[in-house]
Image (tube, rainbow, N blue to C red; front, side):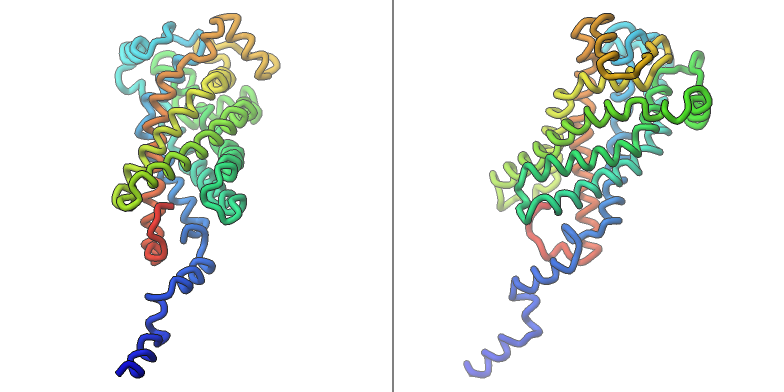
Length: 333
């Protein structure tokens, strides 16, 4: 009986179940994390849309606080800024420019996450716990995605600062048309250099923190890691978003100033250089002006990152299951 059982046990039909080598062999054929490039793009696009739409009112408050001399807000307090917006426009004022955000966030995050995943695969050298690879991959991702997002971010912020009575723009397309006619294509990318300089360290800190916190949480309770997948991603995302947002607030203030030139009393800058904007902010409001809006910025990025990463990882899991590759890995990716 034993001699008969051995050949049956070694029957090739049973190998895909019992031999881990077959799983590795299948993994080499499939794409990174079991997903294809277009699936990373869709997952990232969904995550970006959900994140920015959910947190848009907080972003509006932050934009008003950072725009020096903007009307009608003069105070830097979150409560006063919110009260001023509600008094002048009502709740609808918190959502001005959300159309531009919708048009920009989806494509930008599709580029963002797909470039990040491909770069992480390239730079990690087979080590998924390489923080340097995570950081540099984040930098590559932001340079590419900011080229897509910056024009719509400019439109979004100009619409956020207006109101129904005094806004020079009737909507997204009217704003794009008037900005192009008055200032040309250059106006759409006036803050691109500043945005990249801000988002490069932001994403480096963000991704490195996210991967490190996620790994730490998994090591605390590895036996429950898969069961608590959503909590792990949300917690790691919130920590990463909160830390990165506080560190890069001064450059975010500069970016807002460059994108909102001439709107509601905002200054126009002759050179458009970062130094020129920094000096203007310090001259008008002191060094505290460089951290205007840090509270709503952190209140935006911490939950936004939690929402974004949770949605992104959930979308990846959906595609992994769709591809039939989720059974090849028992860990969180």
